[in-house]
Length: 120
Image (cartoon, rainbow, N blue to C red):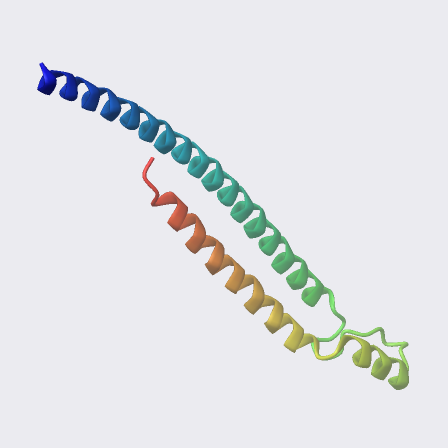
């Protein structure tokens, strides 16, 4: 009888712990699903923003009067120099912006992949 009572008590304890772990795992899976959806939504928004930015830059480049100087022809050399001093090298800025968006995209894709690999 002592052994039977001990087994019953052990089984009850195991059942309680199993139920608690099952509830914890279920809550974690739901949380991970929400995080995955949020990450995928963010990634989609960033991808669309990147596409729009690239399209805008391309449209701007096509509309420029000359490929070398994106300034109005009536700008004086000193005005152009002032603009350059404020904006810096536009090609370097475009390259840096592209690298930043590419890096963010890689990181975002990696995060989404990690979240997608979670069981659930």
